[in-house]
Structures are given as C-alpha cells and as structure tokens.
Image 1: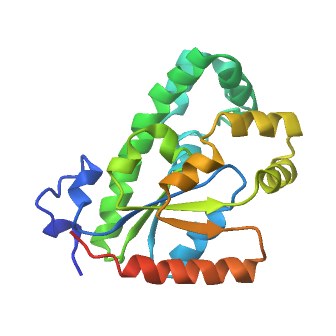
Image 2: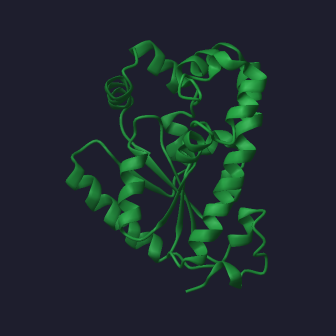
Length: 223
C-alpha cells in the first residue's frame, strides 16, 4: 500500500500532495442527512475519517485555537461561561450579518484547513486504504471538488432533514429552513455525486449501503 512518504509532494502544506497516493473521498449532505452515521460506519470498515465539523468544534471549544481571535473580534459576549464559543449567539449573528460570517470564516477556515491537512497526512502514513473528508459545505466551498477523487452524497427528503434537526437540535422549523436555504440544494448535491447513500430507512439498511460503498471505493485505482 502506498504511503504519504511515497508521494512526490509529501510536504504537509497541501492536500494535493496526497493525490495519486491514496483515494481522496469527499462526503457531504445537507444538515440532518446522516453524514456522521455514514462516516462512522466507513471508519469501522477501516477508512481514515477527517471530519471538518468535528475540527471546527474542537478549535472553538474552551482553549481552542480560535477562541482568542473570536474574543478579540466579536467581544467576550460570544464566549460562553465555559470558555467556548457561544454557538447559538454566533449562529444568530452570522445569519443576520453577512460581514460577521466573513470575519468568523477568516478566523476559523485557515485553522480547520491546517488541522485537516495534518490529520490527512498522518492517517495516510498510518496505512488506511482511503481517506474520507466529511465536509458539510463541500460544494459551497468552491475548492473541494478539485481536491477529491470521488464525491459521496448522503441524501434524504427535505422533510426528513427538517424533522431530524428540529428533534436533534431543538430548533424551531423556521430556523432549520433558514439553515437549509443557506446550503446547496438537494438537486445540486445529487448532480455532483459519484455515489449516493439513501438515508431514509433503518440503520441496518444504511449499514448495508455503506458496506457496498466501501467495496466500490476500494476498487478505485490510485493515480
């Protein structure tokens, strides 16, 4: 199996250094589609999982690398009593003020990118058969499609998304719908997909779909 050290560009400054060394799989889907359930199962099957949402939560947790810059730019009101980002307050701000969203992204995106690259090279070095980058806003970023070899989209009806998120996050329907409007459409995601996981049945059905997906990814030729 190829390792990161076998790449002609093994410097850990750009994910392109892993192209042709190991299959790079993007995994996305709208909020509430079930991306985590799919990536968890792929991880159990041996894939290397890099979840940018998990990284985002890590850097905005108490003592995270984004906390001090966020406090400096937005003030202490946006840091909760535990020293972490007040997500609810920040969510309201960025939805109502596009300029605030740009400032937040200017702080967090470079930190997320740095950690993503570091994790990717480390997992490739550890010998996983392929890497899965879980990116909620993969299409919206405008950069990921050029980096990955294949795109997996986790799909379900919009009403299912809304129901799941309302229950999981205890959010009113109007706020969930607002989040959905800020994301790529279901149709756009499906148009870009190489593989689609239909997540509207039970867990057993999802596991079987993911098992089949794993076999297809393992067949991807490197290089």
